[in-house]
Image (cartoon, rainbow, N blue to C red; front, side):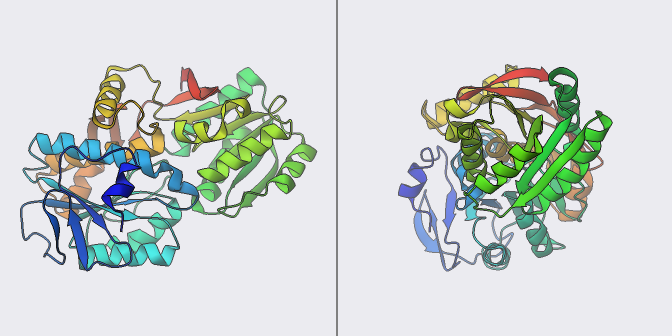
Length: 394
């Protein structure tokens, strides 16, 4: 079980309970920071609280985003509960690890619904987990999926709000072709659904921009032996490398890339890069590294300035850096709040219908969900030491 001590390492304790830490292998007990230990297995709807089961990855390659994801969702819960909750129901947040094998995560989700009686699942994890969890939640509870993903999610009851390749990658690829003269591309990604499907789209965008792909490969999650990949990249002589590696895999690859002397001559462009990953890579290894995203901490907008002030006030000046993947957990609850208000209910079918066309406001400013697809401000940034420098809105 995630203890209160473990949670302190994730950036501090929440300001306003209740927060429940769930044992990922058993649902026999729970810990409520406001009251202590008590039995589980309360029936869904037995009280007025809205029980949200948040599946955040705390282990494996994507586990690097666990701290900022946790802080972001706690900030959203605190703010929404201070306003009276969602449709008058205070949020009761339970945290579950979305790391480990797909089978283990699926069992946790089954237990969260059947025994913990959660009213809704929210997730910030890789798409392979989403594909498995949507089979668990279908026709049972709504499921909000928050981070960048490959697009095309249409499963009933699943609401995906993250960046998709059409809006995130396409304009950035055209800019890199026009301004940086990138025409020869090498694609490398983790071996699962988001890189597979994103690369399919990216290839069409590269062709649109007059370029072509000189190589592509998919790397098992957890891979940290990059010399063979770098040798193939060097032999292919690309102008730019598209990196669709996840979390710590991206860190080790980018460090090895720079150590191999490729950073000075070859552009790098990433779709799941954020401030957390950049900090892990290190300032000496980020030359010619670009990223496109719907969120950067350095975006100077009133909405983000206010968000960053509240984030630092709640978790302190040394809180984990906030980036797109972690911050998406905040957006998820703001989206749910707006969709529920539009539907007038949290019942799955009317909520899902309302969520397909809704506008909500979070740290990213106004985000429009149109026909189930998120449209938000998008930015291209270049790494500048341990931070990003915005190049342009795209």
